[in-house]
Image (cartoon, rainbow, N blue to C red; front, side, top):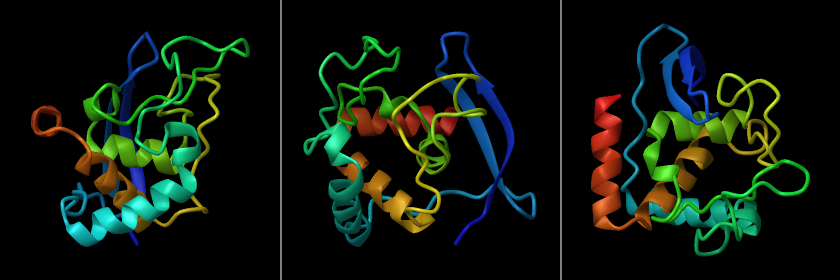
Length: 153
């Protein structure tokens, strides 16, 4: 199991996460595991169905009007399919958001979200598997764009 340390993070004025650089405890940049492995994707579907689908949808469609604030000031769960913004973030950022939740340094101070932190609920491997499943559902065009964005960071 990997142990991550956040070294730097950037947050845009709009509250969107710009970048997070993750290093292992020895200070080395660690890359995510291979997320295109069929066994990882299959395992990720099971975890997604059990822990994510109730908010983000069985088909990764998210909740209606996901870009409009609810009366409580929070945003509905976004889609993880091509129509959402998940693919705009690197694998490392997606991992960190899932593990640690929508709080600094991953979101602005005081940001309120229904997204729980999954540290202590899911293993690191479970989180990577969910990301593998989500990415397996993206179109080739979006997957290529995500890979290009990730390489630039």
